[in-house]
Length: 283
Image (cartoon, rainbow, N blue to C red):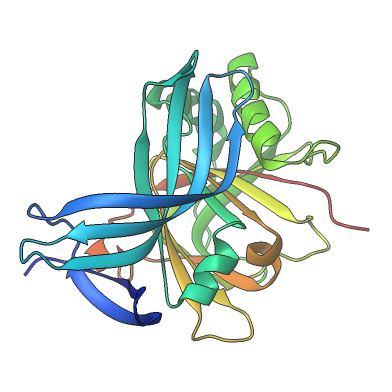
């Protein structure tokens, strides 16, 4: 059986939202997009425009019927004078309901292919000698992480410092400085992160993480209403930025391999390294 994707069908005539299921990949389906930009920003030092959007996706199925669904995507555009020469639209979010989707759309951003394979390797090469000396732990101080090793790093090579500056310039508003120490979290193949909200005494409103070596699925669940959730596909070499509502009102977790599915499709997780930047705690 083909794996399935769930979403919401929107009827403009009746203004009704209902659940539907379609195959993850439909060769016979033609797609068109009506896109609303939630945030758009040029990455300093590059020619890339990173755009986070909510789209109304219209599929013309082989039966001739139309199916519309909410989807969230990043568009990476490398621009020349008055011309966009590259448009890479990738869906990265699936949710339980439209309210959750609209809350998290602006506050949980995912930028696919934020770094190149060469940049990923340079980051791994810098942290690997130290990480190899550590053993994986299964008794995190607050029980939130299983199968991990971690460290913090303040000094980086010039090339890697430039990567982190790109992250900081995109994730943190002008006048908001990220913490000097960058958190490196190495999660084993059989490791996972349990639902939690990062303590406000340790960091402020924004968390930005580079995802190295392996994809994974991050799940956010509303802290007061457990029926409201969203799954995010964090692909290898992507960047996620969690802020404001996503940071304070939702728990987040990285699913174990037994539960690692996105839109019904398995997402095998191998060893994964996160390079995480935060800003100072408020007050």
